[in-house]
Length: 106
Image (cartoon, rainbow, N blue to C red; front, side):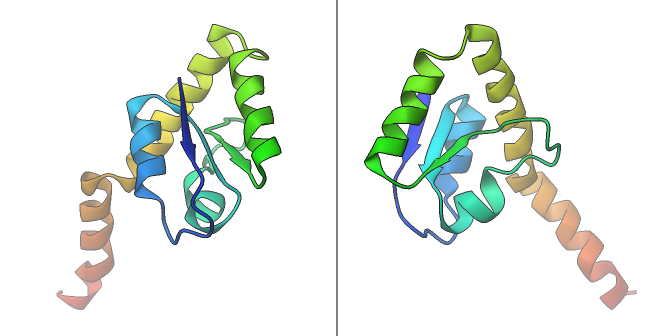
């Protein structure tokens, strides 16, 4: 149900993306890639995971997910997270790479 990633200031956090793609509700360090890039939805109304700094905050987020949410709310987060994880896919990278270098090889 929940994936926990506690590495502080990780530059990216592929395990966070993998957890999102697998359907886990991710709780990750409020630093580095998870904070800056990964646990952000392109749609501000969609939650894709949670950030935490301290052991207490991690525990609070876990309780919020397990006790404070119904199954429907958890499923909304899971689906939003899976959608958000697609922007880190090989297909997405390949398309954006080709778009970026196309002007250089014309």
